[in-house]
Length: 516
Ligand code: SPV
Ligand code: MG
Image (cartoon, rainbow, N blue to C red; front, side, top):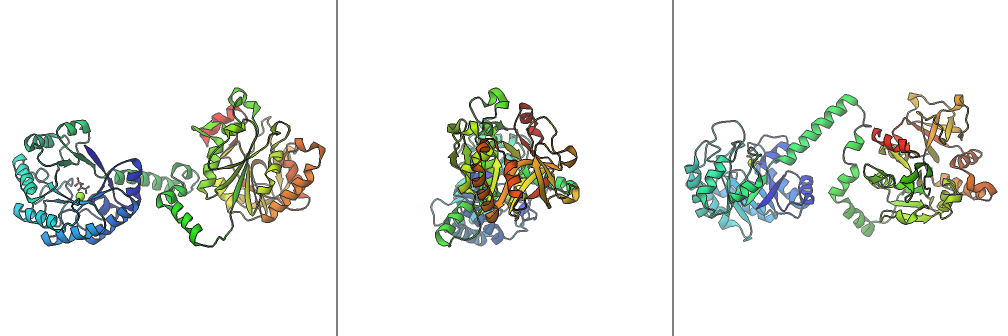
């Protein structure tokens, strides 16, 4: 027994393939609904065939098109076969109703059936027309749906088989498989039988298999799943008027690009287009062990602590790659052999015990280029923060949290030219001071450990690092010392956020990650 999964568009076809199915049901219900139409032949047959073509372009799986009644008489149906073959569709199912048909599950009682001999002529015309011997014509028996009984169903199935149908689809809208069971007992399996258990969904597939069913169609479940998801999200967004709680509950845009096959286009662009444009790269400083976390970081650096099953560092790497930033360098130190991935390059800070994050940045200074984002390896944050930085075009921009923490840990507090207010959200102000010892009245926020530099900003950072490196106490200097040095010659911008991030220094921090 095999399964066909419903799809109704190029992207849903691709998703079905990636899930592991071996074939696709191009459902008339799902296709018409996704076009905003009723399943009553409101979409023209060429519009349906166009959708099938998009689906075929997006997948390598065979597609069985739900061809309704064949969209007319034998002549329309055989023309359909020609067009489907030319578009590489594997087969078509036609049902013995009358054009324009009604969906089988609709509550309407009267569903007129086609004349048997007319329908058989249609099947013969279709089989005579196909050129590929593997093209499949499925005849769908609607006798149960239309309120006729087993006898009518068997007569029809037998006639259609004799006319050349490759398989019979026996449809039922009962909430149990009782009609299917009756049919299969009498049918004796002379031709493969397909079913669509939408209404008798609690019947186990094994039971259907034991009756001799060869193929089960899950006929509309991707459509219904997407409706559920879209209704929930649209309502939430309408009510909240803000994306901040939405972004991390849906696939990133990068996943859309992946499904669209963007990687292939990118490779093709490299082959066929001249290289141009600004590229952003990322430097992650992940050398420190994080001793305050005790046994948790006995063998791995704190950047590899897991949140939701994934190391913090990989949450960051995913944020970067989803933003299109693929050039990622990680400075590693403690337990460096564990910091590996094919998505990153690495630089080793083997002196990590005697240096701070500034020492790691010094080792990565040649990586500071056209436009670079620099972040601490233990930083866990919502992706919009990165989005804000990527779109910022100041020379040096640091992110500070206006909801800063006053616990006893080490914090780099910032004082800015204008104190934070809601009006400033995402507007830049300039940094006037940064450090752990600011007067409480001066503190406007806390540096969270991520910043961005432009080409000019990068040159300034590199020069300043070179100067500082000559100092005897360089091993003890921190990021705030770099910014204070830079402030002597160039402004540093501050972008405020409110919450939605954590740096992981204690077990309590790890437990708070659920809030984010
Ligand atoms: C479809 O998926 O469009 C079908 C099956 O034809 S049903 O909706 O049950 O009629
Ligand atoms: Mg249909």
